[in-house]
Length: 300
Image (cartoon, rainbow, N blue to C red):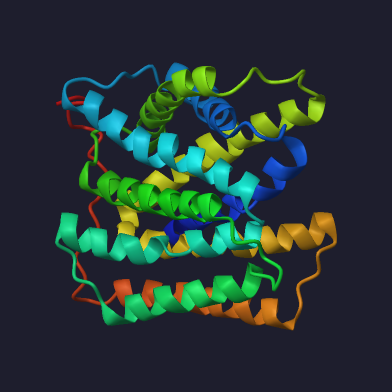
């Protein structure tokens, strides 16, 4: 049985991700998307791996690489590209299509029914995010929009495959495997395609540390745990809370007070998340895959 606390803990992850745009634009050196993604993934993954002291074996080696690629390498790289090239509103609006992509991927890869109410909720959430963050002067940079859309597709694949491949280890260990794999895939690209970082200021260091430890390690432990308990079709709509958090943080730290249209968009997003949860909680919905039995062997 899914507890409200499980939904709240899963929702906490996208709420924290809402700070990514603020931290990226205000605290990181500009123009280093691959390096920023690498420094967000690899140090945090190595730290978690040192804590768990459990390496993947057998089929979990290549699965960890595939999941790390979708959830971190591709997604974070394109996320930073979109954050650098687009206003936050445009990037968030394009990214809000992810719950809809998850619905259809879950149908294809997990044989889960696509519920009309969930589709309506996803469309409503997309409109709500557009009202919330898309301003009249939003710049339509084609490479930036392509990056935001590609990032949404990548995370959708990662979300569904995370549910399909549930390992016999804790969410902490599962997150460590993926962060290390994703960071290792990013590292050569960052070294070859981007210049060395400039001398880092204390703000830069704090920004990288926050995105890696809090925005990476902690949130993805919660997120992968949530996918295991709730299923991808129920977890994905919670990602719409990320732009809500971003607007509220902009209000708090950048004095960007939301107007009436933004308030309407925020209400639509919250309503869409609630409708999406109700739709996927219907009695005929497939049960979520339970968390692995810790008494089982730790490796296949």
